[in-house]
Length: 543
Image (cartoon, rainbow, N blue to C red; front, top):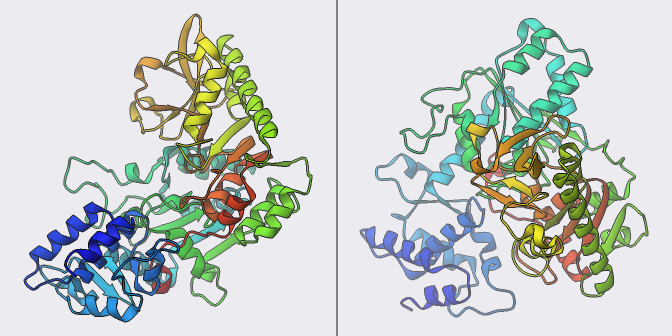
């Protein structure tokens, strides 16, 4: 059996060569022989973590098998896997083993295999939330347009001036954190908030979680704030929590002062973090249960103020969330002017017309940018946006960007051209630009300059200072999280893919304010609606 199961698993794309090499290195360090099946468990646990799972679920071990494919020597019965783990206790320890030195590289508990560090992170988060029955935590859940930020503003207004605390605002991205501050400031001023509260908001940092914690990759410890040095704030509000990874949430909670409050705000139905864990979804599972201890600490908002609950987009979003593929198809074919559905295979003419709509819009952006009408160019970038599920392949973002730039002709043959919409891909504190910020290149007295921010108060940045940017005539659905546009075109691949999930589709179709176009075959749509992200975690059980 030597190496046979490992090699078959690699051939079937269940694990990768790097996972096998790491598993063999770990096995070589053990004082007793580690069976091949145990090495497969190691490799699978590593692969699972890379795919976003907090752990490897032995209960669902067969889900890793390719569809309708046989992998020789792969045990179908759970007992074989459990036995292999139990026979190698030096590698797969219990929770008690975390206190030993050296501690085991993996922890086995409740039929779940964890990397030891990840197990500790999950335990830490659960312990933090359960402390004092969660009295230091508030959870605000809801989809786009349900009033999450309004609820935060009202809760802040309810705090007496004498009790207003030192405040920090943060989010996984700089763009989201700045948006949170701007919306809160607007709503609090409109509601006549006290000067004390407005001053506290003005003085509050509004930044990424990494920057709030003082991340520095070249120092030790890498974070200024943590269990060794608590954050100097009595109230921390974090938005877009669905994008928070298990590791980052653990870092934040470790850094919270014992007396501080933490407000968690987000949409649990959106895409989870690109890194491991589904923290908000796990918390929401417990917080939305009326019999749960977290129920009094949470508020779930369901009324959609952006569309109205009876709007086609709201109904479509609800049908996707509930996994009702038939309802999704019925809504898309209802003939309502707000939603258009194009099958790229069966409707080539309609698809061509849509591409013309996108290229015509790009030409309008170019014309405004060439004329130096910055405000109009920036407004146009928010008027229509193509969101594709994938980067490569037919109708991926590279394909869309190439089609659009080809239609712009000579104007788009150089790297920088008037009308080029760009997205910042790395935070740049010196320019006060964050990953996800979108701008447009405009002509300014014969010189091309990038313009960012609000159309009424744009910020000009020299092109020479921009290093990390992407062209975004089209962008991925992942990159669109936290953004909204007038008309959104959501594009799924023509054939199924493991990345096409219910959460991906939901995130895309909830970005528009007024108009939605979906480009997908019925088969792929049904697969997406029927494929929720099932990340293996134990956090909701711990809560």
